[in-house]
Length: 537
Image (tube, rainbow, N blue to C red; front, side):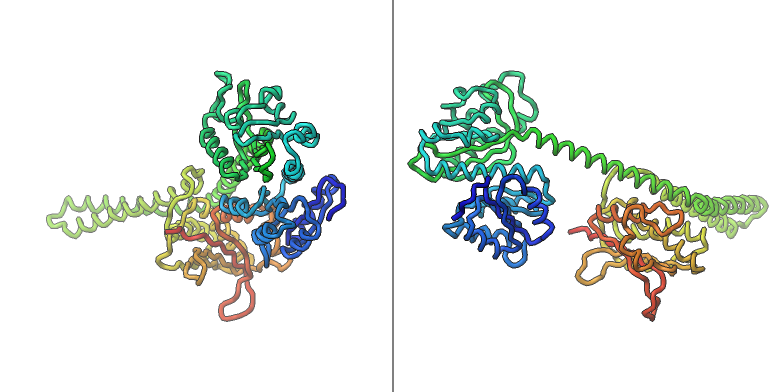
């Protein structure tokens, strides 16, 4: 048995040494006695020998995962009462529910927030000590010897079988802004969730959005079934009016002879919610800045392409003028002829060509306008074939300007994607322009663009851009997608980083590998690729 007099014995369990180090450094020096284990088997052995008050337990571990460790702890009489707080990058509801069903008392998501870890460890260690005390004391001892409860920062209620408050610590009084006599004798659910004492005019949207009636039923059912519950976010009414956001845990006291049937531990989470709102606002601001930077990058790209665009648009417009003049001469000649069938047919054909060239000019301009315009509709459903064709049309302009040959290999019947087409066009155009520059540096006049889907076991559409340049040195390859890293003399080092951000935002992947000469193992140039997930049926 333990003989230490620390604030509590805490066992840290994680197979990742870095995570163990972070947890240890976070809690070290705060009065706890800390133990560590890097596997589920070691955790069970240490827990049986030392019987800690609290275990911070990683879920995703090789061999024996955290859920299995928790099951075995519950099955062992020496460890069944140990409080388990699960640690995991999983943040879905099912994972949390499973953890609580297995006996976990809380759940901390990775990456760790230092203040959150400290606060939760403090709370659960204090609650663990409180539960031990309540299991041995009756109502009189609880009232007369409640120094631990009164020292806690969390609000605490002792409830009898009917749900009436028979004990309230000073923190509970401070949170409710009232004296202890106002709380004693009231039913917990009516006090905190009915709002009968609320002052008119002090309610708000937040109060009406929270389902107090449902919470009353939930708590009363737990009391009737003798089941402990934890609620991460609720809204407590104050007796004199107003309300505050709170998290609370209701724990059934196992000693049926005690007058205290359940204990409620709660804390005001106003500061926590404010911090979460600030983080969300910062995230939205960052996303807006990233979108703006992406747009600026597209405008810069279009500026460099301006000469090629002017040349490309000028060709169909010149053709339109020439065909129009020819049609005019043909129609004039009809005035002096009786049989003019052939001339009429030729004139009709000429006018048809005028229409085709006009549409061609319009298409070129429209593609440029779509590329430059900031997107507003978000991701849309689009055939990968249409996306590839649009990329080829945009890139063809620059290829002609540099007298480059764009070799394309587009697989037929490509599946559909859900993408922001303009952003993906930007990624492909950036990579293709880099490939052209690399090829020109070695006097090569070709770049290669391939799009395919039929790669076994991978339900992605793959885009490949290959050049015949000098390639990327082995020492530079790991840094290609790092912000502000560039191998160009005049480069800014943001192009590939933007490409990576866009592709990853679409759930895809992006990478680099040295290109191989056909029918040879020799390396020649670079192959950049990215893949996008196929739209689910």
